[in-house]
Length: 166
Image (tube, rainbow, N blue to C red; front, top):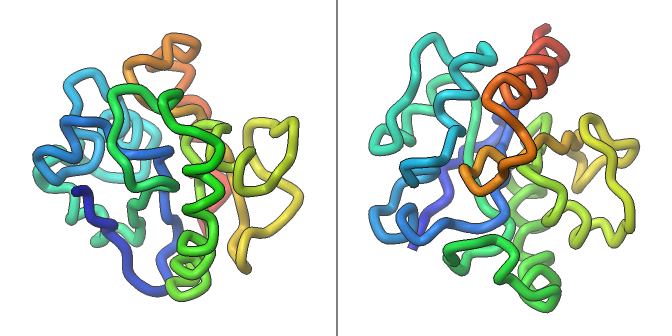
């Protein structure tokens, strides 16, 4: 099982849809070989070096945390049912309310669509807060997400990084 890496009052909690099988097996976020999360985070400016998946807890040092919308691991996020998102919503709301991040960033549209019950979700900043946190939706860094190149991902994440600089 993949455990959250969170603390109170973080700047950002990044929310993946659900754990991949490799991440669930080894207990480290975004550890699949083809996942580009750690590389994108570094190249977009969030970290001064590229964190390795086995050192995922070090993300807390930068004021960021990690969670998933649904706990069940799958090889593909599209294997999740609407009921699984619905069943996860209350515990997810409780978590965000307890930890109070300034921003919750959903990686991909699926979880935020399910949690907000909205049919269409734009990329980027959302008009509504989620349990008191500002919401952004960024493209998923999974290697299965072929719609976004590494450069596209870095550009999207970099734009968000620039917006949150104080």
